[in-house]
Length: 311
Image 1 (cartoon, rainbow, N blue to C red):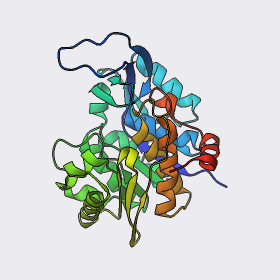
Image 2 (cartoon, rainbow, N blue to C red):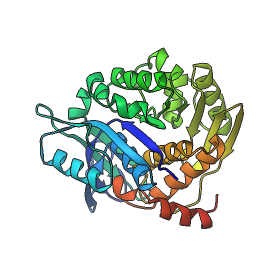
Image 3 (cartoon, rainbow, N blue to C red):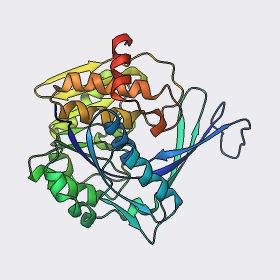
């Protein structure tokens, strides 16, 4: 079977992670943490997730001409990702994320976006041929919205499905045109509330938010609820997928793992409900490991997990 062709347009960061018993309060220092430095960024995480799940991935991004950029591009190449459309920015540093993780696996993140803030429509146009040949184009919100809108227009105009992971939660309303170009939008509770104005606290409110997103133009919507599961709506149907039970270590890249899994499943032709279940397996397995990209599982690992996983 031909591997699914996925183009990811998005961010590349270097993550600096400290895991400690709890996240400090303002002005407080917590001693006794464990430090890990790893490749991250929502776009990069999702590209690596899809590649490890067997997809043929092209990544469109910007990194600095610095050691973090060198390490990032070399790492993507080792994963089998096409790095031809990663621009080395001579004026802006590679993005950096500072991440605090507590003993429950909850996290707090601050990002210095650097070169990610300068990913432009012209960078997307360089990859236009690859985008038009893709099965799925996957985008997030750690790069300029006008660039994401441009990528979505280019993909949708060629009949290519677009998945929008609206993370981090947008500070201002998204352009009305963006959701109308999207085959699937996948917010978490916070992002869904920011997009719809509906406070998402449970399955019922998640369904209301998903319905609102469809009314705004998205063809389908998935609202993830962390350890509670995920609500999906689209293809004339709706449903709920419970979360799989695991011992959480670090939730940093769980949403990105889910998005990469979702893109692969949809590109392989799975219906929405089965695609959400597969994505949930990928996301659940990722939280059992520390770090962003180091936590992302391979297709074989997900298949083994699926055989024994319990919701």
